Picture 1 (cartoon, rainbow over the protein chains, first blue to last red):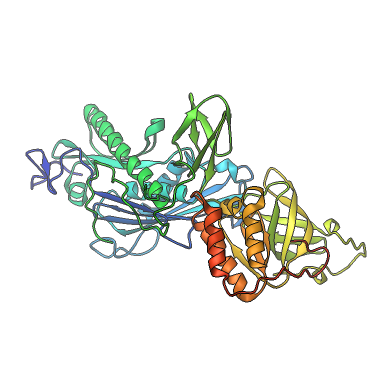
Picture 2: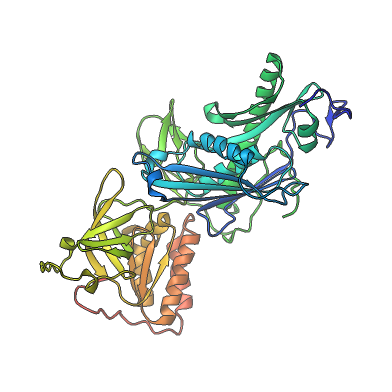
Length: 241
Length: 259
């Protein structure tokens, strides 16, 4: 995260891919596409491609992890070796463990864990193709997959990032903007409860910029939230006569 | 999957989708997602709802059921949770000297003490595997569930032969139907013995061809459970597919078998 990039990323209020400053990339969400999982979701967000699967609540092993008062939520965010330009060394690393943790903490805020004492709920998020903003995309997909699995929850979590590029605050950074921009702020948000469940920040923002980034990200999350609802309802939709 | 062309700023319009549910079906109720407001505070509210401020919200993905003065959500998916008084079908997973552990398609197993058998045999050291061994299919009634969801069962019946179908447990009420209408339909039109466990496991026994039709019908019920007029459609389905098959009243193995 250095200063301004050498090549301008924003020209006349338009970004490299023609988006406006506060415009999301195209998002496609599909619920319930895996037969073996209890709940699942496939999500395309710009060039990101993410598959999320939920198993459980089910018996939790090892037994010492069990909690007699509530279910244990386990999340695994994983990037496929072919998901990025240079081959990623497979397996968990510092970054993916961090993302798994923040996503778990975001989801723990909405799932009624106390319904299922001693059991475990497993959420798997596989990044098949990455183009910046995968933690937001993974959280979005995971909460749709949880709902699809029939796990009781307070609400869906929508997620979206805002950032700072060429001294402009923008919504939903793509790869180039993430690499050559000045800051990135992923946010997990529950619009109907006005609750922020995930917030990270990398880069330097003034107070005003931070406020604006917050406004942008929340607005983005609201749009994502609508798409999540749409995707879930579509699974059981029957055409109206 | 091709790249989506949808504009993100406008939610995609639901177009007729090919999810295997035919177009002439009608939904039984509004589909609601977690967090969706389903009514205002006051009046009774059922399971899977919660109060947020002055609103009642859905706590699960399901169908909204609004009755006079009460509101609830019927989940579309989810695991079976042991409940007192439920009749379940399970598989014996372990035997110890005091009883049996039975796995019941839930996050928790259920335990049946040897004393809870109908035909009590107080002979100490009796090998319990002579009654039910690992892998046997039994139907039991759950008589107690504690706060960590450990459950205890009684009244076992061994289900020999036949086959089992495992469904989403939340669809079982539709397989039974109101006043057991759907279940009666399945039994009468096929001549099969059908035992439905509240946990989503269904045991069927009868002539091979008839069983196959019943399985098909049950899977159809599971698939279309969120639509209206299902009983009529299943009735037609059975009539059509049972053509040419002999339907006899089931033969019971003993007078205790009354399914």
